[in-house]
Length: 375
Image (cartoon, rainbow, N blue to C red; front, side):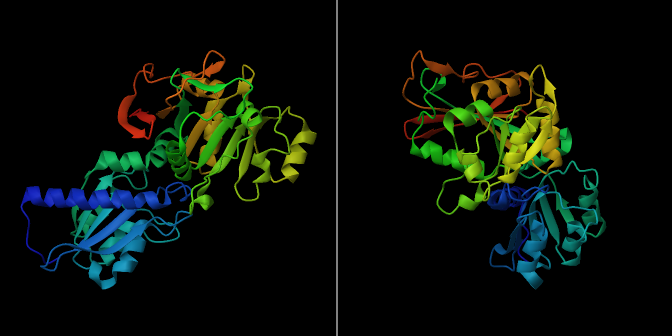
């Protein structure tokens, strides 16, 4: 890149600017890249008239090609002498394709700015080592925390061998999440519901208990114009296979995968009937009469899932909290009360478990939103 050399502060500001853009880009395929994270790459060069983006890439649906490959293909010869901004350390191991670190070297990239570090032992530190050995300037950990948050599912799966678990609850003004025997109760408005759909679109799976499935008969899909094909897998905790064949969940199984976590002692005839309808089963262990959640999460990770959105109900939410399996808590709160016949939430903004820190507050019309994460 032949542009004028910037002073240290100006270069750092420029690096943050383009890395922030790469992180935003990485969200494009969140929840759709299988066992790989959704990484963003932006290639920038300056020939004297100011920095110019010449290539962009995001991990492809299914996990291949990687973001670096996509960005280099778009940049072509303009990559030579340019800077690559990558939200995750470039891979260093040979798979079906050569390592991305080598691809950057071969393309003539002069400088690589990285954000999050990769905990995969095949990569950790080795991608940067390949670059430095080839004479490429490397700057690490630019907006590392922001990038790590965006790919928290991948990092959690790598480190803990289970998916990242986000617990999402909608609370009334008096701390209730529904009304007994009333089915689905609208607690928040349309804007907040659309944000929930976006959360679903960026997740690998949505999980609810059989109580919620029977009471609410939900579809658990993404209902945003243009994003309908981003609905993640649905998972139902249903030890005894009580889910009826007439449920909305089963009616949509040809479009969106549905998994039922059931114990081996469940009725084999019920299992066979749902399997004929297209339902997939996950054999589960039980503990004290309920699904063993740590083992279930290990199974989900083995299926390639890195992020699970737990949407209910109260008993399931409480179980995940008591097992210390929640990594992120998201609370929406509506303006109206439900009353004494409401179902109490197992958690509220004034009773967040120790070890979580508040990330953000937002408002969606009359509804409030708050999010906590555990490092």
